Image: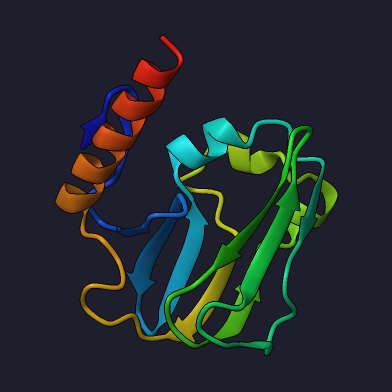
Length: 138
């Protein structure tokens, strides 16, 4: 599905902080949405957790720095890190090349209904957000 020119695959859930979640077996794969990565072009540094780290709901999971800003990714649930995309240490900008196949981390955890948006809700949310921003800068 699309919100304007931005793609949102139907096999994922979404958070309002431009993060996607994909349940795969007993893990949740986490990455940046196409919209999120378009706003984060030029990632110059990324701080990833270590495998085995326990992250509490609302605590920082990942931080990344762009030319313009520093951003943090938090989760609305407790999680244990089970994997880290090691390629990001050398080149954090690969997220910009393929945001739905290049992931950040994998975790074990459980998000409750209502803590993540399904694709239909996410597309509507992001359409409104994009429209508001475009009107603001028109």
